[in-house]
Length: 327
Image (spheres, rainbow, N blue to C red):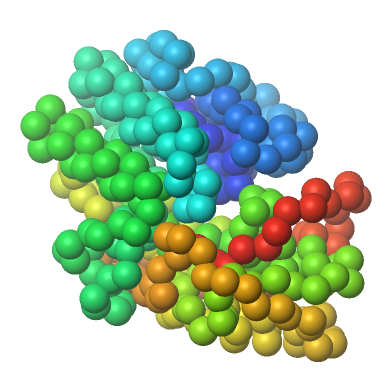
């Protein structure tokens, strides 16, 4: 039984990864700082299943302040999903939070990997936001990144650190570029979560932009499967992989799918495009399919149905947060 360190363990993707690792028979040491980007109660609820496992341990704290050497010494593999999320919030006065949680925390862990991480793999959760408005769709990993937001800049900086520590310090790193992940437990500021909540509550759906922007939406279970594969695959250090759902879909088409699932027309209202929102994203996943032996398996309709059911089943009232176009 291997012991996995999962940072950002109480988050949307991190909590699903914890559940999958426990189900596979691994012990998991989870770390989360429970920052205030959305209610801590939601994050604790994400770990309700994991807390029932004797093989799960949760440590609360800021990664930059914790003893990274001790964390890594206790682990056989590291999945670094912690970070400050969100494109729009990265503009302005909050930028220091992004450099702290996305760049500083990653460098802190990588330094510890140099000293006590021999023989252990470091899997880093990057983002399709590093590409910005890519000139090639679907976009391969060797495309020159051109992030359009401060968030994308910090994710790319941390990714470059992973590649650098792999090449220069011998750390066994893998970086995964997640494309528009959705599903149960999605953050409350993200588009599909807000769309589903509006459907359940009978409210209008607000979309930033005209809805023709497209995304390579990826269901969370598929992302988790690829992340687990990246932790175990025999690959050279410093590799970078795109993880996408298998094809780009417009926001308008996704809303049509949700309307079909809801069984009624939706009241959709369009607003101004937001700073940092790219027009289209699409992942060329050839490398991940070949080297990680991974294929996304969940259709958009199946994934949206799962998220809508999860929203319907939630017993707590929803906070009033403006819905966002997908990013």
